[in-house]
Image (cartoon, rainbow over all chains, first blue to last red; front, side, top):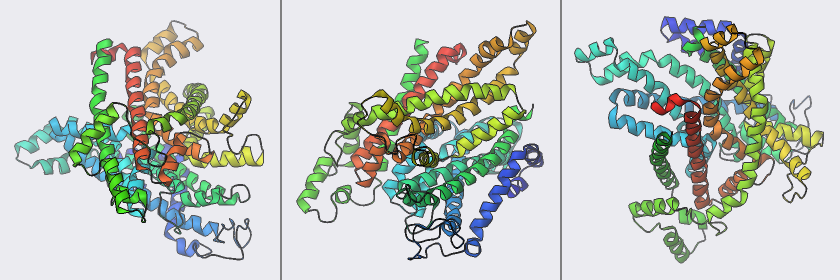
Length: 290
Length: 313
């Protein structure tokens, strides 16, 4: 993911990101973990030892064994296979939700910064409102109102993550707007759309992408939490949060149902956070100058 | 200071009204007829009509909106569909539990997070710093329900140190403390990870300032230097960022309460979800968002109180 991100950046920023990755050794752990998880999700049909939905009636609630490495759940489904398939849902929801939030948030932020005036105040008012709801409560309400499905879950999480992108895009737009090259573009009669898209947006896109990778960790956490509450992708689809939800009923006698999906969530979020931490160091000018 | 406070208070009013508008719109996003959803398939036409009148759904939207705003701003959050009791009563019944939990978490988080953050900043790029950064990142990676479940498994089920389910009728304060311990540590550890991180970066910024170098040159002893000149100035950004964290803390407390089966706003919201009690959900959302707006307001006021420069902006 980071290689495609850095490839599109202007050279100076791109090399700053690479340098940050090189300096911060922990970020390599994060990157390696993330690659493993993405590979597991992509090659799930080949990697999973069993069908994640197949119910082995005679092997219900079995502890980890040679046949079922991480045990089976109350329907006799293989926990390992369900965790591998669950990676698909978490990564898909996290990625798409952030992509939507990033697109809407950045567009609103650039427009607000460029147009200013009443529109700016309206957009910032919207941001204030979004920020006044706790992320989980807002996601929970939207998902509950729309009904539990993959699309609605993505919409709910995307809405909760819009605000930071608006802020990150708006502030540089305001300062860039007064720069000579933007003034020159305007004097040449370029349309506002072209100025915003070609002259302003590229100057901040790397910050936006880095922020996106940071907030993807948060989106995946929210997805898992909503699934745990019962507002995620409906059963029988395997998702980490819903596996923990089902396993929680057997917490006294079948620990493997909750522990292994928990570790999967933890490792994914940690990998994204380790990577994001290094990238943040790279874009924060205060830290870079040291 | 008073002028700054009044100005900041006035600025919160449009946010409050915009928040209420957002809640109003969101609740009306429910596909289909809310009355039909609440009463189920077998409801008679009269019952539906009665409920629609009671909910005000038969009136035009702008009238519903104004009535809603008027009710909420006068402190009336309506009645919970499932119990018939006022939403505000339902909330106030369980609020002490949630307040107790979050207060304990903030206390634990600051108690451990501040010193560890200062320590990591002073030992920058040495092992305490690396270890601290790794631990705080790991702490921030836990969804609150995951850490809660792991704690429950280890400390309550395997080791048996704490009760698996909080007993509601705790009579002695030691019993109450045992009930509170695991949920509070769960929330507190995540909070600690956050406070530690923020403290570290804020301290790093402050310790590089000229006045620290001056103080050091004047021979001020290092503990006094760190606390009075360093931490005191670093606290201002810490307070702001921790104030912003409040929304996350609320979300985490909801998850924690669900896992530990502890009474509070989290269990209330889960119950409301299960029976599709839209009025209670709407009321809870307003309560949560109002809390966040108030905490943001307080954070700004504290900021103004601590940093005189803010007032003149």
